[in-house]
Image (tube, rainbow, N blue to C red; front, side):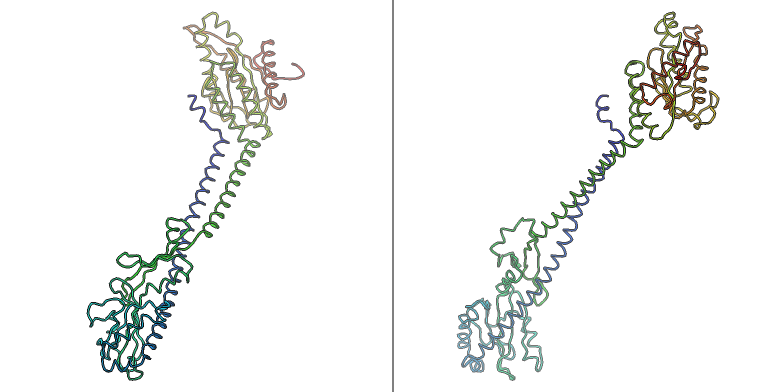
Length: 501
């Protein structure tokens, strides 16, 4: 029971907790919304980097094509080169081609030369470099699909450059085929370069760490600072897959975009919004508490708590019930003051209860009080300790005793033979007198105790707020005085009057 009391929340607590819960939900939404939009930004940025990488790779390939063309012209200008082709001097051609691996184009790392082939106009190999990658047989061309496409051309198209990318031994290569001999070509030269070497320029072009992975999983190139960014949430991985001439996947190019500044701005903005939301929730709670303190909601909440306590203590703690009755009256005063509404306070005394108690015993007295409570509950309903009942609309004439009404009244037992009653919607003395008469008529009827008839006489003192007082103790004291006056004058009820009391 004590544990249940400790966690019981009042109305203001519930409203405040509701606002806080809504605020916390808002903060959670802000947090996850920021993550959601950050991920969307990441996706768009990844797509942008992929497009940018494609553009840069195309530029690198175009530059490589231009450099390979320059190399082809330089080889063609060598003394006796065209004559060796005409004579199909394989050894001489091999020597001239091998020399190219030690020329400026290669030593300056302009071109990562992998292989050189010379073919006749029917694309049959008549010379190949011994340097570079090994092709297995002297009749095997690298990237045969490209040479087949070149051989199928007709007329002036056979004079045009043709180039493309392909895989050889699972390595991406760039291949260019250029005609030799001017307008009447005597053959063609095939220049094969390592594409991954040229693609390393992406690191400088994009300003990002680069990793180039071959089809077999081998890492062909890895930026020096790549290990430093692995597992770092501030770096966004972007993958671009290099395609061959046949639109097959070749190397996988991975880039790492530095998102540190972007994340800092997102987090700064998110933290600012969350801080503002927290301040707003706190301000809302404070404002709500202030409104509750200055409104009728707080008194109503306190009234409900006191009613629950009154019902809990009952007749077993009469002193406590008297204190709670005063607290209840205090909160009803606050409530009615805000509404600028009058109400009645009554003190009821059972005049000959002690005599009955002595004559028939304590148990009989307890049973008699139960009957009194039942009869009061018939008028003010629910229980012998606290009841909320109805009466008619304020200002209307009271209905007969057995009629359900719509007044709200509160009843509390203050002592052995004394009850306190609050009628928050009884606004006139006439209404209060009507209620008092109904109570007197009910309680002054005969009771059957231990198979004997017993008769009680009750006296009621009445005062009206704010006519007779504006403080709870003052109203209780004056209602008490009116009750004693009724008892002394052998009356049944008395309304407090400053002139007569």
